[in-house]
Length: 387
Image (cartoon, rainbow, N blue to C red):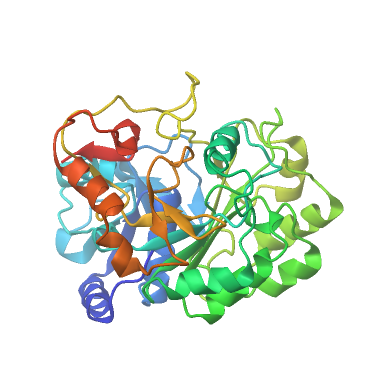
């Protein structure tokens, strides 16, 4: 979660401080992000509330998780609920709270909706080869017109690219590849942290040594999401001795604010026995697999019907959570494995130039109107909604 501006942060803190009890509604990734953020602005959360306890943990960071009907009736003036679910469930949650007489509600993710993010794909070619990650689609599209196209992003070019983005850009080490498969993955993280950016990490920890982990474990990531080995080997994550030591330490590690170093974890199928032995119940692992805006054709994946009406993205209001490729090109988002929407190149131009150039403006304008025959990846995406 991107931090609120200073003025908004003070307003939220002052507002929540008026109540005797504060709860986060939700128990998934969004709820944990909200909880971590509240801790940074000195708001003590009394617990987590969900609609039903089914498949939810008993507690998060020592705070209980209860179904809403398990709470004793509280006077509205003494309790407040901070929404910790994705945008698409907000209305339903607010209606549920109203049914139980709870009307004091805060929606932090509204401010987070305009987050500017650059996801780093530092190399083309990922040995993890997750079943639900269309690497072949990416590989073919990237080298389609130039078989000698730059395969790996250099540190020098990485620095130039982030300098051509606004200072409040979140640098997310995720994109289309495992970050630590690049030989300078750790150095890139250190560079971005030293540059003053908020940073995220989505990783299997493949390619990372224990010595290298010691170089990043004290970095203040906004979020660290772990992708885990699975019993069916849909993800080819080598469970080496280094991997076991890193996972064991990372799962026990706390950040400066007292929250867990690893924010959440997910798996492509049933967890592998090896991972379960390492984890020892220290983290809950989810599985929410999507079809990558139609880039994967399997019936068991969550997918969206094609949307013909004007649409919006529920993850970013301004379509500005881009993926950086090794040659400096930025493409629309983390669903664009086919590179259907290249927007510009950060080695040649800065952010302001790109958002005023034809490719980006075409995406924005296309989304604002009904389908007219022009291709827009977002119309196939689970994250898009009717405008």
